[in-house]
Image (cartoon, rainbow, N blue to C red):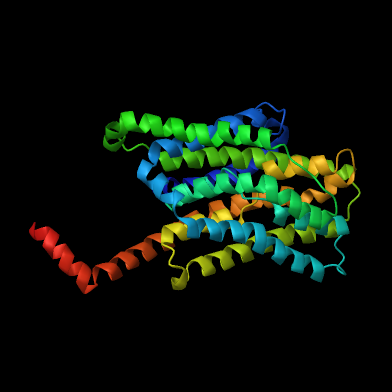
Length: 355
């Protein structure tokens, strides 16, 4: 039993986090005892990226900077293909019983950039290309400041803007500076880190559980507040179901596409692509919607799909960790075995062994 708990502690933690959030949502909501607007938004995210900076080899970060094929794939997929896919889907659902504002909300979700933290944590927990995930999460957030308002303009028919300076400062404080500080400390304690196996993956996973808990506190609080909003319950149930199905479809399609031999992505690259391409940012999306619908009652309805998408993407990602890790290890071993069986490589290996 102890072995099973140790092996599956993260999945058990997800279930406990959701149950605890359901028992008393105000404890982890904004303004509650945990103060997630500070402890999660800044402290937890800073710990995640300081942890990444401390554990990542500097040469891996430099290498990720030049992996332009991964960057192009992720940014085009999340900011072009997903909005187009959602536009087609919403067009097909125009005559369905789903309320128009909820359909607009689905399109709003598709316009959002990738989030800063969740994709990085999941990639790190699996052992994928963490450096590429960090680079694309930051790049996507910066691109989202420019691209997302334009996408929302076409979707919602109104223009919105987001303060570039405030977002830049926030990303610098929570992403760039912690990574640089972590890299600075790594140079001085590298040998100590190599002697002592620090559980970097477990630390990031614990931070993810905190994020899951506070996210579901917000979700259950939103559910309680929906009694004050006039909305068709059938539409809400259909949209919640659609959000989960959409994410599963996007995950499967991204996995299939990025693992094609023609694209020449390594298994670790596919893991980073899988989460960075399909996850959407709530922290950037809600402020944009508040600017666009300042004081309007439609905001509470049109933001529902995004509020549902955020916890479900973390939950699905957490559930996929053991399966994706198993696939990656198997695919990586197969790739190494195939590469080692080539005559040219075998010959060079014999040369080096003789030396």
